[in-house]
Image (tube, rainbow, N blue to C red; front, side, top):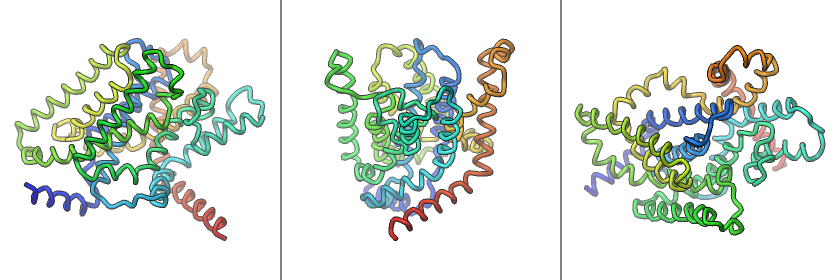
Length: 375
């Protein structure tokens, strides 16, 4: 068995691109759609707090997928490697984020064009606004970009975080430690210790880093268990069984979110979501086969662009359409789907027509900046 494990590790190391985890990709896409819906129309949070739950799913699944893609692959643990890693990530979304933030700045009503507003703009452009505990700073202009600001912090630490995935015992120990660290502040605050901690549990980069890393730390156990389960993956009974498990776990997660919305703290939902993402990662059922279809892959390819564009398109929408008249003609739910289609079309066209071009421009700007600094 030890020889078999060693052989599998070498196989992982020599694989250029690992299999796409289709079910997790679909779960992330649905989570993103629900977040966009929450932003574009009012959804009561007394039944399910979709904003909190979907963000937890996105951070845990993002950590899980990065751990999956980089597990047992060489990456130096230093600042240079960290900057190289975030550069690869930044160039895929920052040009669009920059354009939308500038646009959001100029279409915001009742501006004074003073130093305070300029500082708010810079905090958005430099992607540091999620570090503020003040809601005004975190949500100004292209406000929903706080998500990317917090995610960028996790990306920067990926080379260091990967060191915790060196073996199964270490990852399990770290998962337990991080879980305890994630739970204690919330428990203390819920029992009245408000003065002990001053943290934003929704936007805070440190809190989100814990969730991101918890997703990553699942990977050694995931691959170890996958070693035993892969021998059954081509059997029909096993495929049927896992399809049933996939449906059951998704229904169960919904019931838990509904029944325990105002009972469980965020930290316990994070642990439940970790178990959910761990099981969804196996990709053995028929659902995974369905979402591996090229049509679904194309639809889900622009989810980050849709997230960045949502506020800009929503504001622009009401500049060209009479708000009262439109509201009286269409039900809010129909309004949402119309705007969602527009957001999807714009996001998809950006990916197809402009994404690579803007990435090249971004690289050239970075190269020119380095040249000027070094000179």
